[in-house]
Length: 478
Image 1 (cartoon, rainbow, N blue to C red):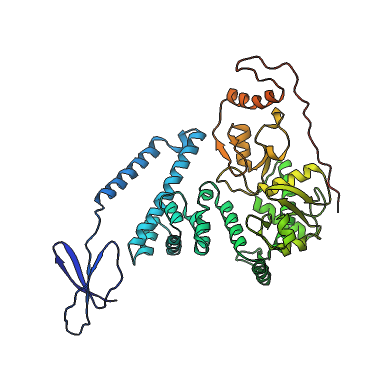
Image 2 (cartoon, rainbow, N blue to C red):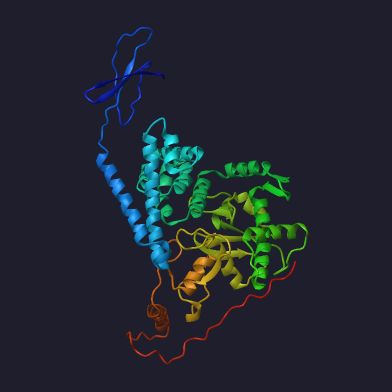
């Protein structure tokens, strides 16, 4: 479409002659076609560029809000506030960032042909990143609830990008994950989307997909500039799980040894050392035995041969797999199959029947991420008594245990942050005073002893139940 250089003004509206008919509606402009004759020119169309909305007031409000945010950041400098207040400021600014990012993408999209260039310029990103944002934004139109959540700032761009493929296949299913996305991390949301997409596919389709993934396997090596060796590899689900299990087990051993020696190393460097140790057949040997890979599958799906709605069949750290793959792994000593009936774990298929081992495996599969809302960390998770602390006679039971990353575990243990709720409804609360913390932990113990004295009464003289610690026996060697 070629635009003539001659412009004319009619009552404040700008009109330009185009050499081809323009049929589509260009918002926020109006198309006013008319026919006239011109030498060596076809029938023309006039683009009537009168704005339908006055943006002077909204622009003034945005500029005022920007000035208020800058003033707030100056008044509460990051280095001058306490950690709990810094947590609240970061939360508020994060919500604002999501809202502003969605708005910038929407208005750049409304700008028309210059959308990609405009968004890249105003957000300070590459054109490829801006183009990706516009594609995701346009793909949300098929799911109104998801589109509204993104426009209102309830969802970030990364969360919308994870939900976009599901919205293209099943808009209601994508809209049903909006509430989860508001509290979950991107990693958790991605895993849930993978489960939903897996449930939409038949067992035959999943088996075919796994075969295609296996055919794509490769391992490439090359020498980069400056020396050394680079490795890039791709594996199918079952082979990848076996490799990941062995690598993570050896990495944990090296991490424990380095921490005990007082010389901790970055995780990526320890993982490289673990890979070399496995290749050289010189593992650290801590714990002995083969690496353990956990597979969770519903009992009904294992018997039926396919996954129904609400059921799962997945390898921890890898994602959903076919039931046929789970059946094949039953006879391999490398894998531990955790069979569950609904949400209650009923059987653990393993070489040992030690109860703490059953609880630990169940905990590993229930809490694959740090349970603090929005964290999503999967590395170096630690077990914590979240309901009733172990020092207050808290039971070492699945209902009282959770997994936290090192940062949040340290915050909860040393700085008084609170974790409440339970699976699916976790809440991360700011610290309380010592008296409030002691009172909250003392109430369950008093009820167990049959004594619930009023606040301020002297502590009970009846000794509490003896505390016992269950110690796992060392696992047998290979």
